[in-house]
Image 1 (cartoon, rainbow over the protein chains, first blue to last red):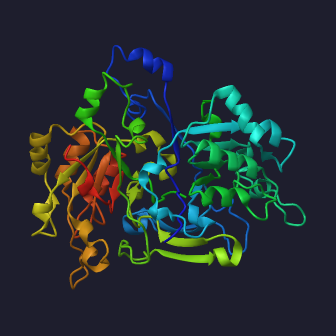
Image 2 (image 1 turned 90 degrees about the vertical axis):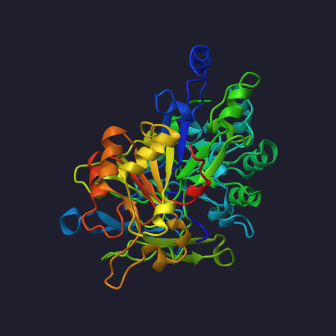
Image 3 (image 1 turned 180 degrees about the vertical axis):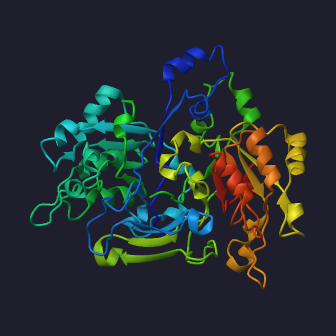
Amino acid sequence: MKQLASLAGVLFLAGCQSACMRSQAESPPAGLLEGIASGRTRVVALSHALNSKTPHWPGEGNRPFKYEYFTSLERGHVLEGHFNMDEHTGTHFDAPNHFVAGQLSVDKIPAARMFVPVIVIDVRSKTAGNADYLLTAADVDNREKAHGRVPSNAMVMMYTGWETRWNDFARYKNADRKGVLHFPGFSPEATKFLVAQRNIAGLGIDALSIDYGKSEDFPSHLISHGSGKLNLENVANLGDLPPV
Amino acid sequence: MKQLASLAGVLFLAGCQSACMRSQAESPPAGLLEGIASGRTRVVALSHALNSKTPHWPGEGNRPFKYEYFTSLERGHVLEGHFNMDEHTGTHFDAPNHFVAGQLSVDKIPAARMFVPVIVIDVRSKTAGNADYLLTAADVDNREKAHGRVPSNAMVMMYTGWETRWNDFARYKNADRKGVLHFPGFSPEATKFLVAQRNIAGLGIDALSIDYGKSEDFPSHLISHGSGKLNLENVANLGDLPPV
């Protein structure tokens, strides 16, 4: 199996930066992971649950998520089912071999690469009136002026607000009469800048693809995967992440 | 979708306890998560990759993992496939509603519960000569004498050595002529003790089930899920975890 969607496990840990610093004089020093048990660290799940109406890529050969029980507590001790899905349905990451030959498949990616800082670029004011909005290099620049330089190895999340359409597949893919999709994405310039100048871990978005719906040649996929980066699509709960 | 296998995301973070403690006077305090980028924290993936020969529960209605490509880089820009599987195939956790009505399904489990301490009880010397070995309360007691009390909210891993059979489904399930399976598991007394007296997060094992192969009534599932605990099955790389 060369390419497998990550069905679970897209999570974010948010700590109480300043409060923790203050309390360290009195209590043992501890990190974000260590703070989960006490509730000092908050865990935000960034994955959608799956069901038969979950949006999938509307291409040739793609098909909807399907789940069915084959036994039940009444019939045979246990509740269990099987499921059938495209590997890029739901909240998932794209491994670099999704678009670029010779790059890593998901089973070859070291587990340590799954733990990275996250930053969110909120472009909801831009996408509200323009479903075809492309995040620009200027958006990254403005974000850096407000919140500081994008850290090395960060997952850069584009917060488009498309998540509010998640439970309505037609509005989420937003196809016109000719079948052309309309949802926002990363511009190739912004992707190039983030990959080459900021050494990011990858791109993430709360929509079907990091390239916008109208794209025919998927330049942001080719640029990011060409450099071995991972991308996250259909991300949930970006609004629950802190600004920095 | 009520029950979904976790295909990825079973990971263990091992830090350099004493060395980190020593270095804290000189460097900023940091936890296990913060130590991943520098390599100070080691990440161990506890999941098997899936393929068509991956062991599955050999019951009525179960079927093997199946993956097929429906497009390729040559044919249509991208490499992509779909897959078809039982939800409890591969390395996965059992949500409590797997065996007990009214308990939580996987989509209802708070994400913070996915981050817990892990302890490993190595019973390979017992299972080597006895495929039907049941981990006893005495094994837990011996482990506590050697390594200290099982901490609250720990995932207790039974290291049977069955992982060495993973790539040979027949030897992994180890069915006799009558179709009875033979692999080790947790005894109901040990499970009762760990759940009631140690408030564990759940049980884990490097075999097909936390109940042994011969079991017909799955008492350890009923006890642990009855108390809302999660169980991990077909865990990989337990030998890479530190003793404590």
